[in-house]
Length: 332
Image (cartoon, rainbow, N blue to C red; front, side):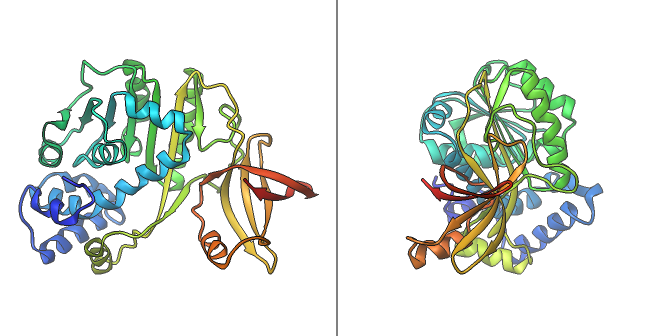
């Protein structure tokens, strides 16, 4: 099936649901994710909730995987397409479907989840394309280990133990773009560096100290548009999924080289002549300001630039140093 086709998703739910039922179940799920956190696990306990979750969160989360892949070097993307892929906390198979849709390769796909209903749903979407289990599969090692909205729901020690047991070549994660998630991922990042991994994304330098501290947290913001049916659900449950904060990381075993890139951290202002952004770059263990001139940009390019995704990596050339930690640059 085409995983981005909403009609196909409806056809493969655990139980058929009318739109009114989907909306009612999604409102319960959304409430449990926010104001009733003690009930966060209930969305995996009924076929109706699992089906409703799949209608909305599956297609809106899938696009996050493409965003992460597009930030990585081409050679690394190709390597991910070659390696076996293990998704921890796979749910209805969201990121297995995203992987299949992005790469269209025949490497082995594995999904692990503690919910039998989620695994049943994932099997309906993926059929024999993936293998599913409640624990780590014995025939997976040294491939790509993926955490998709699961690291923040498990103990850090458990996630690190999974890395030790599977010895992955590549580790990917996509987690909520919150301060809580950033604190957890920062500890995970330190542990991975100690284990010999370097950070390919988002860090411009693989093993430098993170310049973000205090009340700040490093995350990405993905701006996108979904299928009309999904946008309608978004309106009916009052939950905007066109602008999605997220935290995405990529770790590579024995990665020592510099990435030679910068990362959009925060939009500061637009002037008559330029866009000013706070950025993270490899040679500074602190955030700096880039002034990006509008000259040479078309109106379309300026419009696109004013809604640039936070967290995008980019290449640049310094034109002039404007002051302490401020530079005028040109995008490459």
